[in-house]
Amino acid sequence: MIGVMAPEPSTAPSAADLSVSYRAYLACLNARAWANLDGFVADDVIYNGQVVGLAGYRRMLERDTTEIPDLRFDLDLLVVDPPQVAARLVFDCTPRGRFLDLDVNGRRVSFSENAFYRIVGGKIAEVWSVIDKAAIERQL
Image 1 (tube, rainbow, N blue to C red):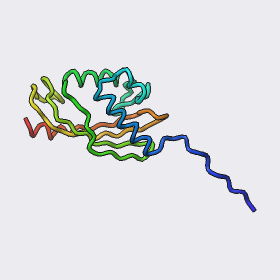
Image 2: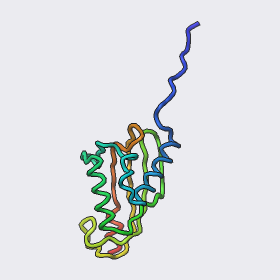
Image 3: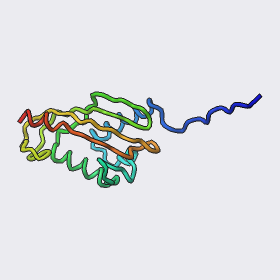
Image 4: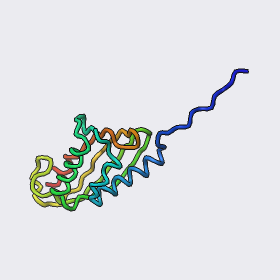
């Protein structure tokens, strides 16, 4: 009889683990707990094809929340297929001045973002993000 080896136990996070982690990541963003971002984002994170690193990613989020003080990351849809996470985030906020090259100037706008993440070692290693700019344009 040929011996059958049991599969090695997986050390990769499960879909349930990634779902919990992603929700905690959004809570971190909404709390503006930037010092905790390294628990969720890799040091060499790539954003829309560009290596921005953890420091650059943090600066981007800090800039966004400075320009949009009432910015909240609200989850509308979450699909997890390890090591990928896909999310539809919805926003209802009042950006100051220009936002996405549009003169919003403090008007309330609602829009969504489709974001896809690749998770490596339990952290976000790559992000692809598309914001529904057309939805904002229709409101202005």
